[in-house]
Image 1 (cartoon, one colour):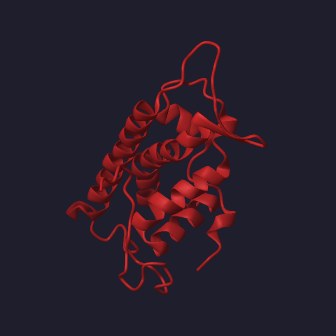
Image 2 (cartoon, rainbow, N blue to C red):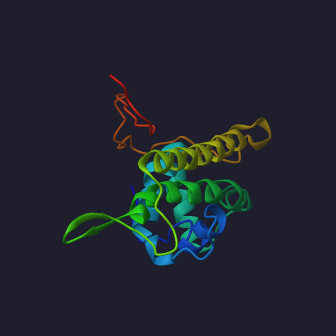
Length: 177
């Protein structure tokens, strides 16, 4: 497994704000490179597989993207990733961790959403990211793309955490007992 964590993220904070935020004046410092990395690792890497993810990270970093990988990155991965980053950063924007504990960010000119509204918006953000991810996979696996993405779904030396087939996922929602 190559150390692709040292390479540039697929998107920037500016890309995320431009593609997935209504308020274009959102402070870019709220979207750290670590949040973008977390979104890549949690939401994009599992879709692509380790080998394809590493290939794309390396080519993107070295500015050697093949034409098919460039098309995939620009029209499918980046739009989905922007929405996943928004999903991951929403808690950081809504709340602030201080030495006094967790506090709600407020403004003189607006009122914060209540918990129900916040959860609804967060679920809708995740749904939008999933729609774009499903479209990405449909593109990769379509018959007219045959042979273009030979590393798709390949997990290298099977060192991925779910290599034994024991997979549990959390898909955002409420569990009632």
